[in-house]
Length: 312
Image (tube, rainbow, N blue to C red):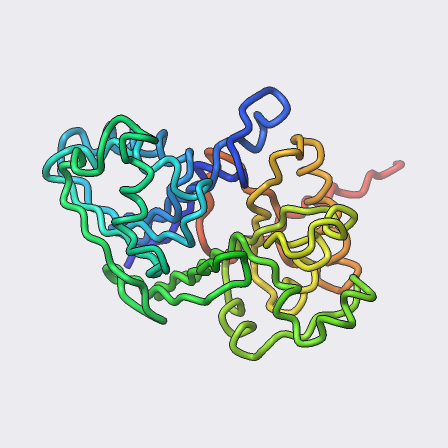
């Protein structure tokens, strides 16, 4: 299998936030494109999936498009772009949608629910591509890639996805509040910067990632007033990364109230605090719309040594 790449199409959480103050990192809600060799995988169908769909139609130029859509959960910011995914309306295309069964129905029923006449003018039956809906399991195959799942702490539940090929490992873990499942939750509630203890299974899911895309919605001071809302703080992300040591970490699910300068400051703070803990080889960045990343250990920057200047 060839290389794995990730391209971000929507990086924002909760609600789209267009405007000049979010133009650097983007205002569309969650959508990520993964190319694993010849396999096309899309994670989540927030508003960012609309632009992805248009460019796929251009890329394939009328040839059939085959894609797999992995849904972390069905909160609106993760599915609101689904009715605007143009490849789903073209006969000959194929889209397999993966997600968890919900108390109120299966994936098809719930995705189609937001396309009922009271909410949207076009029903899901107008999608003429071959649509298939599958319930996720602990591990399954998508082409030559192995996909593993992990239930994450979030109101209503959320799935993390670990996509593995022979060469690369991507871990995608948005919409999670990992403090909620720390084994020493009482201790970290009293001291937010205390080291968290997680189960061996949770750490195993995260370890060995070339790229970790992780929910980092809140500044520490914000998190104090938003506990239970289902998202991580900077401290939580620093603590997790120091334990599982991904080669690269992309901060994701940017808060709708955070302007670009706040997101940039969160990256700087995360990297600084990781270095304080002795982690110096990890590449930390914020997910940004349009950014494409190859999923592999990054090469260290080239160090250029200027020759000594002679006074003779």
